[in-house]
Image (cartoon, rainbow, N blue to C red; front, side, top):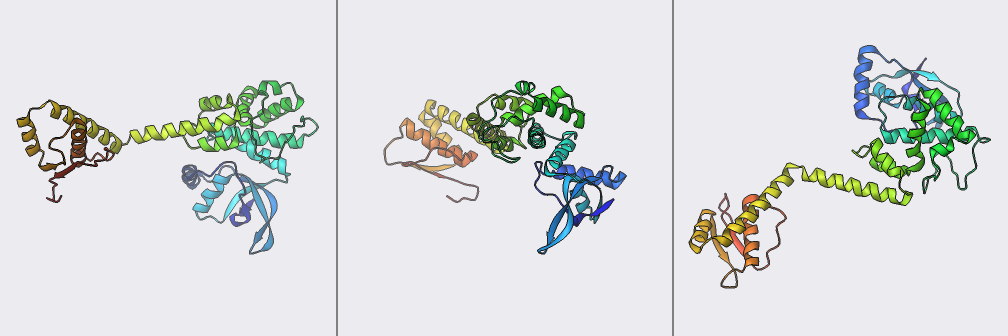
Length: 318
């Protein structure tokens, strides 16, 4: 059946809509149409303060956004009568079967499915002190291993049920469940969309205590930013200029007076003013770095307190 797009509310999602994925769907739908309807459930919406019969989205946020961008007013949909926990499981199952999830997203969806499964089967779950709902904040990751969970009925049932619903092997479900169980949700959020979002990095994080995970992710992200900055053309140009300034200073200290005089003329220097009669090594170094800053655009040279260099510029200003 077709439903009005305006009557479908996406609600809170674990996975953000990717503009690139939506663009792919727009092109695909334009060529072959929508192959899989979105999945929704009946719910009351409010329009201008008035209740209306509408739908909540279970699965298909990218497809829904693609239809909006294409100017469509209706979208093919499958309507399911599901409870809260069943809806969470249905959303997780559809996303886990998709090819575009990142390792962090897979960890979050398996975690969501585990919470929902436990809620549907309270007779199997082992009560845990301080246990919360789906979005309860986990201060520290659970200490038990997924392998240990296999001995409990709830773990055996969850792994088997997830494998059956998604077509993913039980071994894979066990392996991918560990990051969601052991890594803090806010840490998964930190690395989403970064080069750290890999299975190998999640394995590294899950072996750490909860209080160390945030520190490690913050440190490693900062290191990535530093390396990215160093790879920019501007940074490389500044580093080259610094090396040029160092070579200039080395040659200056070894050069005789007549060579220094010739250098100042060729460098376009009008004068060097200093309270003392001569420049010592430290002051000369500062002066030459200042020359390099003028000539080679070195931005972070040391400050000059007592040395003033007057240099000719292309516009003949000082």
